[in-house]
Length: 271
Image (cartoon, rainbow, N blue to C red; front, side):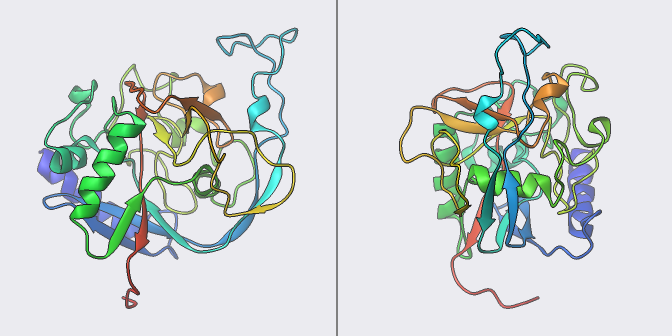
């Protein structure tokens, strides 16, 4: 049954529901493949002008200080080149194929659920091993700018659709992760950009610039790494394309996974 579902999932990915013009390809991991989608270059407004007054648990509190000041200021970002990103979070099956283990706490969710309990450093080890298997691609994490641009997919609101339709979160996940690709995709054909698991990003966490920027890489130094997208046990306030979180790079959690960006190693002939 698991093998059948994986085959169906791969075929569904190639159809790219919700993004008929998107190009897709794949990363070969031996017995597993990671479907990737080509994201067009463009310019967008990154961050938020929404001010959320909340307590330490992110519960509404009009008298409390703003909790989301790290999402500001709203600023212009240009992604100057097309890039390839995973259509789904990396799954437990894909991690197992590369690393030979499955650290996930939500194993009962199945091999097509996102891998979690992986630190930023663990992910770098996965990428190094996966890159050693490649001839066409170099794999890395997305920058925060690439992640938010891909998540928004041309939308300008806090989410790219009604939350229950696009994300697994505290209100509908029943306390567990779920196999990837069960919710509706965004306009780029990407699934689970919000909810299910937080997603590690490349670079250091730091304040946003005020001026327009092109291809920002994050802060030059720091002590925490960004995570984006919210999670299966998170409240709705965390399930926003603008929400920024961070953790130290050796931290792992039931709620943190990742998706990859793939950079072509040489020119790829059109299909």
